[in-house]
Image 1 (cartoon, one colour):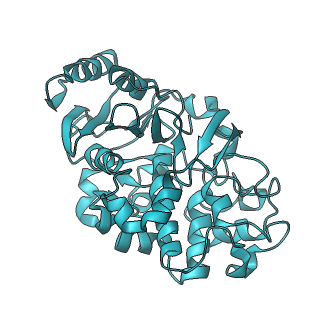
Image 2 (image 1 turned 30 degrees about the vertical axis):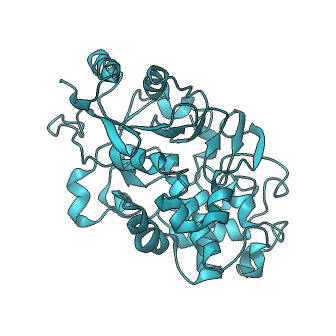
Image 3 (image 1 turned 90 degrees about the vertical axis):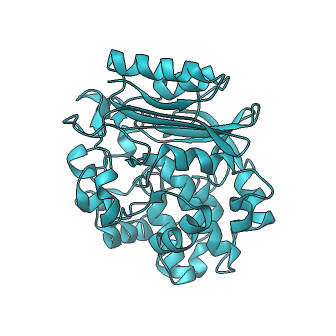
Length: 364
């Protein structure tokens, strides 16, 4: 299977790397997009969008991005702040009364967005709940004690992030995460990205597959992904019902081009993200908030309210290998979105060819 698409002068090596990944079997389906100075300079499609290898990966192929989703969930939360429904630093229990118990009385939206709310996983009480029991999972978080006092430790809220934000939006703004993303964020940023894929786009969705049967159990984050069951079960994640649900922590479906375009405009003072949020919240979105050892990711990193940030990039990765970033050193954006769930080594090779370091991007 030949890699297809285009690369402008100076980017030809990316096509060679991607072809090597396909030829070696390290990649079975992926899209790569690079944006610079307001335009796409690389768009590459590799492999297949389905396990049966009947649908070649195309420009408009959608794939579930896992924790890359969290960056867009954060925007929905900040829209509610923009609209005055709540602030970043007041206790969310002022609105979500049921949540303010058992040590969570002073948890803030900032704690949630920076993965310091003390709920990096669902509690044992949620063990028998279905993956798509939205109300039950949200209520389990409201009733549970945090694993640590909010604000005192750090750990990516692997599966709980979207349900926490959804709970805040329901209580403070009288709306839902799906509605704010779908009706406000997505059109404002012109995203071909979906929390809940519409019927008309289902035929564009790629099927996920594990690189190896044992891959899910080898993850550092595995203990945080087991309740409720099914987040890494491709039988569930490839189902129509999950594709059309809203599970904010992981099931945003997007194309590589739309993801890279978003990151390319992320810091622009005249860009759509700043226009959506306003200058103060745009600055908050990009500003480093906390640095420490992230127990779920297993390394030291710095979080903004949406991204991992270091001296070279603003980025977010998704478990399984998808990643996107804005290079602070080189003024380009790149997205590598894949259906073959493995580590971030493939995206890291693309990044290295661009002069970027992708050693820390989020869950792996």
